[in-house]
Length: 209
Image (cartoon, rainbow, N blue to C red; front, side):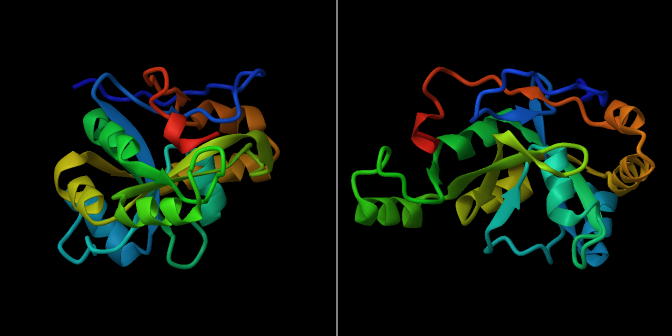
C-alpha cells in the first residue's frame, strides 16, 4: 500500500469555500484526532482503538492538520496532548459522507427544521464546515470539513475502516516551534501534503448550500 507523503503544499489562491482537502493515497485518507495520553498513546502503540475507546459516543475526525492544531492548541490543551493521524479507507470515508447530515439547519437544503432534525437524528454521521486555518491558526476565507461519526459509523471507523494510526505529536510540536520562531518556511515544509480530495459531481450537494 502506498504511504502518504508529507511535504509542503500551499493553498491555492482561488480556493472554493467548500472543498475537502486531505492527505490521501489511492486507498486511504488521513484524518486527525487528539486525545489524552492515556488513550492516545496506547492507541498509537497498538495501531488500533482499544476497547476503552467508547464506540457509543460521537467522535469527530478532521482531514485538516492545521484545523486540528487550532482545535488542540498544537497538542497543548488539556485532554488533547496526543495528536493522532488516522489513515482510514476511502470507502469508509465516502460512506460516511454519503450518509451524513449537515449539523445545522440550512433552508436551501432542508424542507423545514422538523425534517432536518429528523434527518439529523437518523444519520450516522454529520458534517460541519469551519474556517480553515493558516500556520498562525488565523481563519481563512474557505472552509474545512469536520466529520462527526456516531453509532454504526463510529463502530465502523474504529473497527473496520482504520488502516494505520500514527502519533504525530512530535511533528505538531516541531512545526509549532518553527511558527513561534517566525520561520514559516520551515514550518510549511513539514506540513502534511493536503490537496483536494476527489469527489463525484454532486456527491457533497447535501452537505453545503
